[in-house]
Length: 289
Ligand SMILES: [Mg+2]
Image 1 (cartoon, protein in one colour):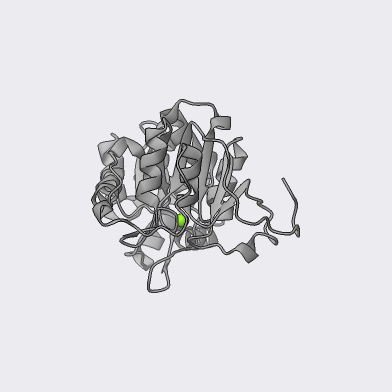
Image 2 (image 1 turned 90 degrees about the vertical axis):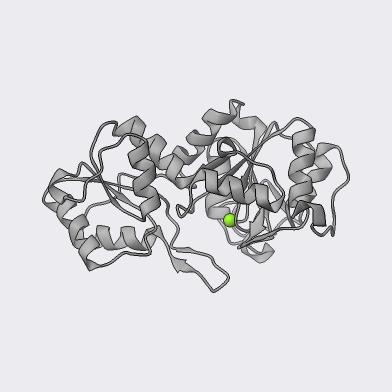
């Protein structure tokens, strides 16, 4: 791995095919409601060549089945088992570390629903909370912050957060994300989260490696962010592949402490590794819509 300040490598695709590819969604597979060029063809080619494909996202606004539906609608057939979200990593973490404990979610209804379905007691009362779960919450307000403050300071609740993202990119410029809610809770309580379970944490990686069942060295994580996607891959011995189709430009690589193993202009360049020709300059075909 080259260090900080090195000259950025020109985009280059891996020559080998990996047993499994872990794809980020936003900025990697699609932008908003549009597939990125060649995404459907590349996933199809990799699957046909025998590779597993799985999709990961830090966004806790929808559940895995909703992301699977979206991918299928856009032309990439996917089931719930093909998608790992920060909520899945959260559930995995809580089942491992806080089984049976009572949760107070500072979160949107989708998080409440998933945790309740997983069998956890849910409360709105600070005095009953063993764990304060902090997530992206567009209904965050002073009353919720006060409840969280009381759960932590008066009743000793442990803080667990879904993801470390300061904001969530949108076509309109972004929305304050989980890190902002967590910072508010940590600022007033003086406490620190026990875990932040989404990308790039090992809890997220554990959630998908368990499903893939292949050695980490045979897995490539493909994403548009160095500090989350690439870092998560490399931390456990997986390859970290940066795509330049989303949040990161080529000029950001040189100053980053995280150096990707490969740099691609987009996922379409992976198709060559599946035995086909690189889908350079391809635009999404009509049948993939
Ligand atoms: Mg992304």
